Image (cartoon, rainbow, N blue to C red; front, side, top):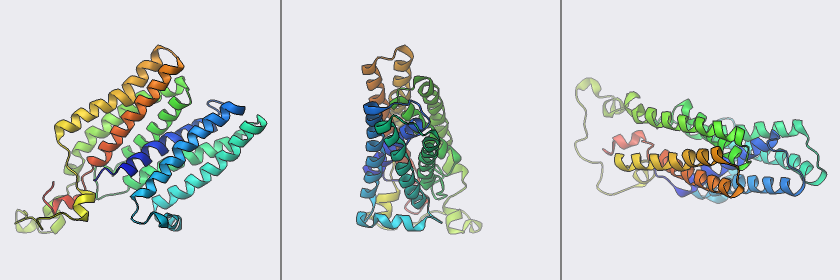
Length: 290
């Protein structure tokens, strides 16, 4: 798949923002006054900023509101509704903390549940696609959710929460890569199955469909060299998992934690770039790109 910057920013920032809202809704931490305002402002900046970035990948961003109309069949539509509901509920919960030093726990739990459901819905936009075997697995949702909460725990400076979740996220990420490298072949999809000519003998393309490019090639086919992918995976793990875990294990200095947050975010961007760039769409078979 073409790794569009808008969807990389969307999935990365919104995941961090809603992950932080999950922690805040659960009272981890439970700030009041100006500190509550800072935490919620950061969470909303990330969540809303990520959601706004997603509209730039639409052919007609001005029609984004139409996404709300397909909630019965579309995970994108469900994500939109859940995101709005989560932001409204958490705004009410945050207002109580900021202006009245009041923590309405049931409201926070509801907001945390809606925030988590939003991240899950985001993951299902990709995990439901059978045409992209690497995505079509429960590991996709697990990876999105655990990275979201781990990042939220890091932003909330909840070290007892963040540390084990970061380690768990690293394990899930590695398993996802290993499984994903085999997913296309194990799906059984090939030129013979696509054309249903397998019973006639070996099937291969006589010549390319055309010599130029088109929308399908641009949007659904992106080739990443194995050597480059391996290097980027190592960089992602070092930044996204290794650096934050090392820093959090040593001390709680606020400046070092800031470095841990920035390193995690940078590694997350690399991970998401790979998530899209390495996703092989079955249409690549037709163009001989697989």
